[in-house]
Figure: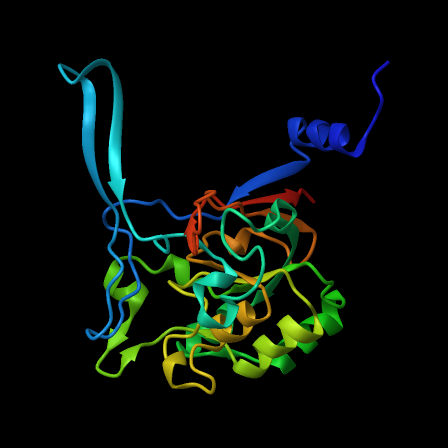
Length: 262
């Protein structure tokens, strides 16, 4: 008789539908929105594809493409080396981060009602502590995911929400980022917006605090997530493994969540 293990039970629960796999990834194509920077900086390209062969003279029995894109396109992973504050850590690139760090419990903080009213909503330390009062203390090594329902916006214009003074979208307050990275020792922070920082975060102190502080503490980032409304506040496990790009600062990835059915 085979030995019953945690993994065998997991397979059985998946087979019986008592654990559901939720795809937290947006489709990746030429129309996928990409973050824009001021014109003085180099820009990251969106995805472009070119057919190598498709059952034709160039390859009669196979179909494949070349793709060109920036590492931080679509649903993507931010490694510590992505930001200057994280550049000197050991094992800080997509090919050197220990793979154990790609899997963690999910703490989903629902800010969708607040964001529906205020597009520049900032998640604060007090919001997180209130969440902990209801759901329990965030454990070290957890993914903290900020649900805003921003992923339900359709079209690049609505998703990026750029106005005369720059982009407007929700994100974490600098003090909240310090709290999560330093006092809760989280694995990383994930959002539904194009980047882990709020749209107006270039004017914060420090600028772009989620990048600055999270990566400066060796933490990870996930951006452009989908379907966070399908996750419970606690109890899900997130698997977010980037491509093993040598010296990579990040990569597109397929983010999956294992969710227990009620």
